Length: 260
Image (cartoon, rainbow, N blue to C red):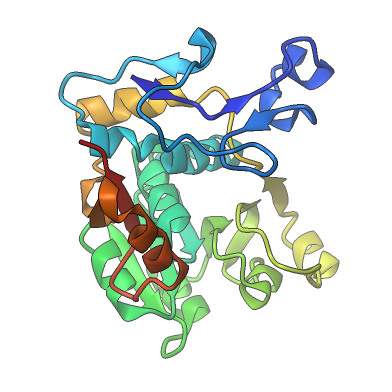
């Protein structure tokens, strides 16, 4: 089984409107003051518990939670077949956003980061063009790939303030921008840059209504998250795993604790 970790108030207005991820009263695992669930058993609402396909193992099933963020972002972007997307940030959320965008119909994803090992991994996941923005010009590469038109969608998944302020540069006229990452402080927002392209801007907060589709795509083989699981730790080494996650090397994307 796979459990969606947010439990909203079923009587809350946001929940009743279908936006249960925005319910102010939601209780979300491992979000203070709510504890996590590093334990053998939990009691969870059936409405937020899903059967995992037989060909999807527990390690993959544990990746549904971050994948759901990417799926929600792809839905918000209204991906059309053949779209070209830019994903800024090759961390776990950026990686699953790229996979979700490709599964939704994007013909190519341009992924940016400053850590080359992560970009090298991304390039093996499908039609993904890696761009190390410390050495390469993102806008020039996007223009080359699109005959000067620009990307149909820009997903900002880094949370980096500089990247977030420049999302409109590689975007095509009439394109869509989806903010996923969370900058640590308010950013400068170039209204004119957005206006002259009539950009449509969306934001995501966690996810809603995507777990069944994420599991279906994994079960069908359309999305493969296994390459993103770069590090594993036995349960007895849980403290070591958390220490590792606080300062992960550039070669790491997602670390998991293996129960058993």
